[in-house]
Length: 374
Image (cartoon, rainbow, N blue to C red):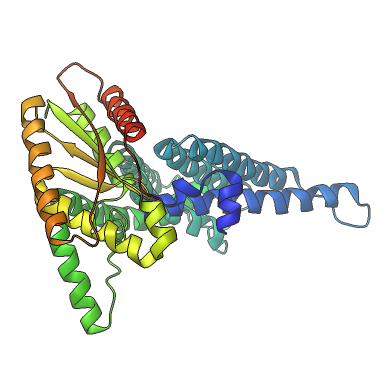
């Protein structure tokens, strides 16, 4: 699996968190499904000994393959939100076609299950704005079909026309899905409004270990890094988009890289490198406010968003980090931590994306000046 992800150029995207993994796996399933079934239909068309492939089958299966390829392109370009939208559009299109051409509301559960899957995945994969669009679409269809049903224009019978079949399937399964979707939205919204600090996560991990159990709360593991307990990169990008459109300017950004982590991993093993990363996360958790977004950005990088923080306040924060780092290294002389930093501040009217790029550029420049131990 790792070799395949690396060959496709999406290994880093796969490591962004649970939601990113779901999107990546769905993308690979789309491609695999499309290749297998499109190939089978072509063989059926060419071989006189086999029954002809119906054009509707080719349309549905080739569209799935196309969606998978387009999604792969977006994942490689590090555009996970666009990838999630393509996945959802493709799923809805394929399932709606199946219901229209093939679906029987009395016996075909494939299309119905697919429509329910669409509503659930819309809540899990899409950002806040698109999530509401998906739910409002569900509600609009639900109300519209109820009106048609009560007026006698839709009857739940086998004799429905193809259009009637798809409308009835939507009526039955979307009405169920909207309830599940809204519950998921409420759960994820509550989770986002009450971010947890790293100390709470470490305490939970310790309690779980003592009890011989591991927490699998979906709302938590979908937004947090499983090693450090910090927010993962996907959550960082979601909050980045929210802050970009909000009114909490000035917003400061800090990028931090653990110096020489690869060398430590090679010399002392993965466990030592992981412990250093956990200790770094603990240090950051103590240095920032609860409203700051402290995230594990990549294998050896952390990214922090500080709303309502100007350049002067950023300087105070950086001094606090330096003092806490010095205190830590004094008490951990055998396993000190070294960071390379990049930072920037975005004022109202400036581009937050440009400032993120500026912070990354500064980090690279500082890194080139440092002598990284190997």
